[in-house]
Length: 161
Image (cartoon, rainbow, N blue to C red; front, side):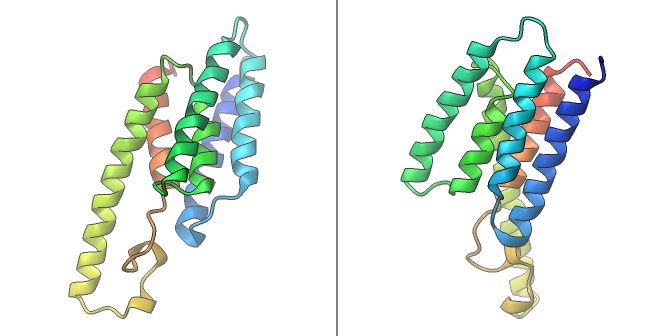
């Protein structure tokens, strides 16, 4: 059953990719995906002897507090916060800064790419309604892409795969 932890981690990665696609298409992240990522983190922990439940729970709670604050001031949408909180369950307090750094880095790259894409589309004279959602002027940033990118970067840096 040594393949079970990898299956749970792989499924969580798939859920993150699906969340990113949903955010691109509809600017909405289904709650079921965040719940699945959280449930897979618990299932993963159950397969690991000596899993540090307290530290993973603390990471989740801290991210919830940060996310609630970001939502309250309008810097993040509710779906993004839920996805980030569920993703934080995969790390401990020690790993949370690296995870958040990856998310912020991916968010910066995403913002630059979308701004550049919008500028190119505007210069080309493309009608606004013909542009894909994220490239439309004033469209929100589909931040699930950045969250997924940050999580994958964190996993690549910290997991011995």
